[in-house]
Length: 300
Image 1 (cartoon, rainbow, N blue to C red):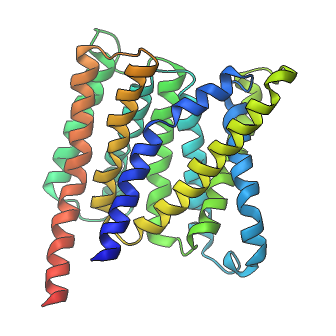
Image 2 (image 1 turned 90 degrees about the horizontal axis):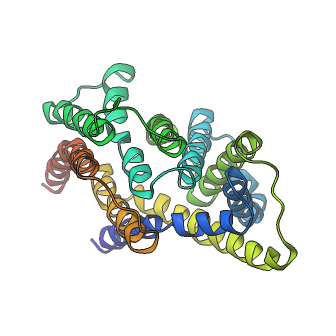
């Protein structure tokens, strides 16, 4: 019971923490590391923080399931797109489009993994798609992402659904090496895309200490400590509970952007966003019920 409560608290705090992640990302861009360069620097710092732990335990990655390892790195690539998206779109919409990923997860489970999908999850797909159409097409336009940031979050969420499926089914990597692979996948993705988004950065010499400090702190706290903590907690909880607790990110992302960046959502964006959140809750609810039944039968 104690570990379950602690793991739940960790996931809840991680969601809140990532809800304000856009703040250091935009600060790094303001100081000169614009576009994907900033995310590349942040995730490279995270990978370098974690490298000594991986080198100290070289067996941590030796002989691990290749699909599981690649899935973790792919998850990092998805998160890199999410991170970069904050510079090119509204924070709340970027977060909401990312949290559309449960719909992709259901489709992957049904059509690629050939798993039985409960009726409530099929309803979740319908609700999520309705929310997406209202959120993106409520002004009478085409119901597609409207800017680069929204597209990055949308595609990132799609990739994340594949990555999480691979991690759940095949990953046998422990938390710190997982966090390293995650950061490495994000670094490669960011630095590969950076030249196509913004010119090579030039940073004023007086800003160098502030850039270095922001990059190092963001890499250490968001990409190392919080990711490692989340990976520790996620394996101790039902995926349903993890998904629900992480939705605090949506609330804190939207609220912090409204307060600190003056971003607001239209009525259609709010209505569609609410349906996307409801879709996520419906997607995990059957798993939660099944998990509780399984727990009770094991106790009996």
